[in-house]
Image (cartoon, rainbow, N blue to C red; front, side, top):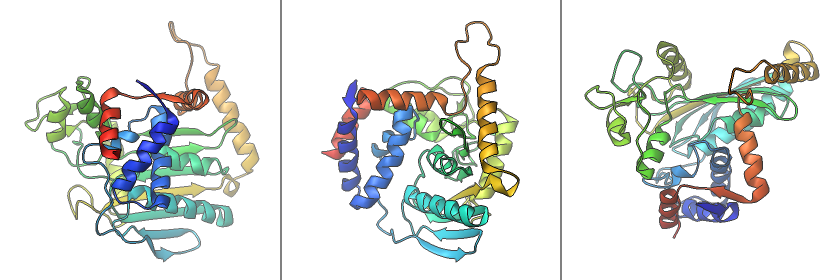
Length: 326
């Protein structure tokens, strides 16, 4: 069904209020969720239904436990991951503007950081190169196994360009965990070849996949990326990883790099734009209408939805969200 974006915002804020967040916290979280929802990314409003993302009863304030001119560490104190990650991104940007580079890690955060493209795009809009990595509890099997060990371990890279940044946002899993939740909510199967049940049998049942494991994206290559993201968001930042450590201790990492460290920032942006245009102009295979850049489809969809003021939302998702909000 189609609903007004304003109604979706209202329901989202009411749901977050029910989950115990302050107005400021709810607005930050909703901004990140809507970034994903408007783009057709499954890191959106789906997070508010089912078990949802209630505020931890043990949540405290984010505390900077280490701070240098280039780096920082944030103890999330069981705070929502999106709130801690937004602070980490702001700190990384500030350090990169002042010193050329900023790297900030978070640990002890509670629940998801949402779509990582949000943070990488925010960095790229500042004329910087952005990297973001997120850890999560074991749901993904290493290549050759059916045992869940890695998180879905998304990563995002943002490059400044005109008229808007080019942002790669991808899970190192064959699909995001919330993709399973979306399919289960809609009563749909997942595509073949993406998951195992608990006995190692291939499955298209999202519930069976939740009890089993998601495959790594791209076979051994995606599995290798999953290992590296695990190392960044677990051992490097002192958070849980691969079932080692408390399940609620999620780790994340964000980096911002000023192109001026190697050359001219404006020339870099100009040449990334040139590269993007060259990609768009490459010869197309039969039946291919357009060569798409990373983030381009989502950017276009966002603009269309904002211009119309409406968004299409799955009926079950809308009804479940109304239950949570009301």
